Length: 431
Image (cartoon, rainbow, N blue to C red; front, side, top):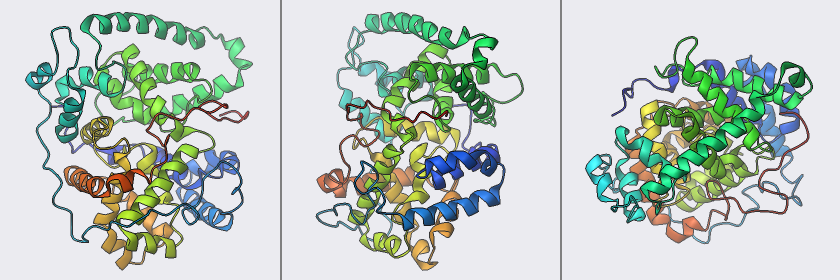
């Protein structure tokens, strides 16, 4: 078990940082104007809320502006699911009960004499239903995140660690060797470093591992993010990345291994941070189609209230529920998601499950977009994680192939579909 109880949750986080995520939720589609006003909005909560309403209306007024471009398609114009599978409006109760975490004895039973995992599907099933004992996370997460191959041996993993550590130091030296004089002429580096410096001192500081002044773990967090911004220079650094890295570093307690696990995760979730926001749009569109499939009446309510863009779920999807659960809970949830046992997109079914749980209140109180966004954000710390996972499992099961067809190939966290233009689409402006 981790030393941090579920009582220590995200609500203790810096409110300014939560505001940053809220602002990202609301204006991400209008990136150019948003970048011009971001800093002032982060300092003013009322300004951010007014700006969010403005941007929501902007999208509603300009739904067809880019209909001929490879951009987000509004759900009204997207192909509708072939059938609806609305489940019983009563709470779902038939998802499988949660199991105990993967134990040391169970873990060793999956390994052959040379260290290969003999049945990766059975292992992923075990992780999906029970999670991983905290003492094992450092080892198991490397497989779930793709740093290690399931069929690799002990010897191969030891060799990989040595090689990757050396490679990490080479990449890190690229920014460590930049002199103050050179930095003055390197605008993008200064801007990225400044953003990272601001973010890391506001990331999970209520957790003992990161709390206090002059905390070396915060320094390591910064170094990894700076190194990643050079490793993947096209993507660089965006707000929200530190939220993904912090639990990984806490588990790994090793700079190089944390970097490579984080880099592997970004191979799947990096599109969440693309400047064109296509990765986020694809997931929100898929979510819209899943709700239409699994709860048509709720979908119709959102349609009638101009909420079909599902921006109120932006934070859930962007950082995979990091703000909604405690630090301990998010480690459990993420390893469930990383198992990819029932679906690579299980997080979308989790969104549907939570929306269905509160559907009567949403519809009964006639929530408009602003009220709905406020309500969704205030669910932070109030969601029963085990029950939500059970309900999402039930929804994923009844959706079956119809549900899978709602999610286009390459939708994060699926591995991206390569294009001639490369994986990341960036503009020439400084981040």
